[in-house]
Image (cartoon, rainbow, N blue to C red; front, side):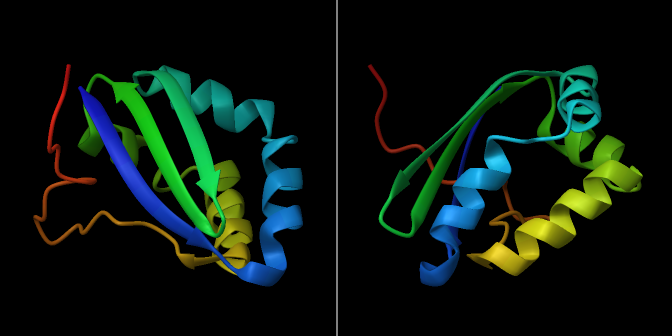
Length: 103
């Protein structure tokens, strides 16, 4: 499945956000791949971040990473850098941005 997400970096944290993504812990990227992600790309336009990921099951991905110490540390770090941390609601809302058009 393909999932598109939207997050927003804090204006004063853009450089730190980009620096953090040059140093994503290998243990985290291995866990993300093991949870079924085959690709994940993030684009930035100003403060707006747009993610597209291909994975087997997005809910499974979140569940497998939820209690992983390296992911908890990463999410804490991202929480310091982002205004909009995650656009997925565990209250049953569909993950990500709605698809409008595809070629």
